Image 1: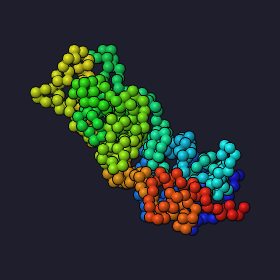
Image 2: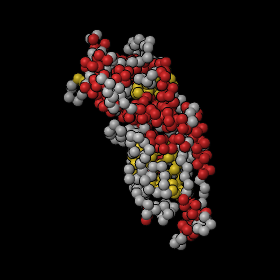
Image 3: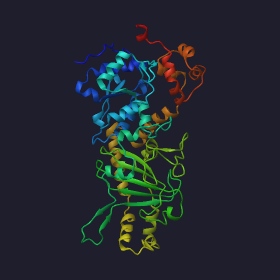
Length: 461
């Protein structure tokens, strides 16, 4: 039987990373041994108790938005609300995805040796950390919830504002073709040979001349899928880098538009939404090129990142933005009609596809998708779509863009003003004088701050 290092229960809220690890060790002892290798934790530290409900709501929403489970999974609160215990199997997360994320974590570290054999001092009690690592098999079995939100809401390879693990947690592929295969989506379906045409065009769509983020006109398509709850769909935008010629939605119809990029919203098995983007060749991208689309209203960064910028754009509208199809307006116009877009096409099958593609009024379906999303969201965290979006984005943006002042440095390190003044890097000492620094700079200096202190377990050696 594996034994746990003895840890005295904390009488107060955790003040340091080591306090968090001690709480994890205590809670882990109550978990069945067979479940420990799948057990992970998110911590509300260093958030104040007054903010905990807000963080819990945001974390519940986003954890379930990273899940292929058909069920909404509630967060399991423990350690007087300081921890949320997670079973990787419940969200269908891979251990590899968690470990890749954990490898980027700056906040929890124990003393170790690097490749050169040099000692790198940490700030976790090695005995406690070793116990947690042995029982879970994880290099970081606990992560900050606000940091987790920020890093899994991005999808880039590196850089403070780019590094993210969204696709890894959802196991998203590298190409549009593979995504459609995973979602069991087909653009065409074979009909019996006796049918008038040998294919049925399953795509339906429309177009807009302007939209909230697109730099040019864009096409919008709705595909059926087998993945979802009561509503199953994929919305795909066809984004262009021009408004004319073969990039014009008024000159190129029904999938013939020349695209520079695509953005996807698809239904997850639990009824929440997933996000994806590609370049014009159908290869996955982590952010949309600014000549294709921009978040024009964001005060800090206009880049459209997958996926928190997707929530920012679509979340307030219950997950799906409506649109007024300019091509359909032409079709139903008394003086124009379907002939307007079928003009020049002699192939009867293609004319039929044009009619099937544009003739549907998608407003009713969009409304059903919105109602479904709102219901699932309420079941997830009790919030309305606009409330949830504001709350979730608040945590992302506070972490990425919020200033770090003296109070923040003290609260997160658990170290006093005098200690910070005497031992910290100059960037952090400046906060004592009333300056604020970026989270990026704080992360870069965090290890130096924590390594400068001689911790209790080191004194006892």
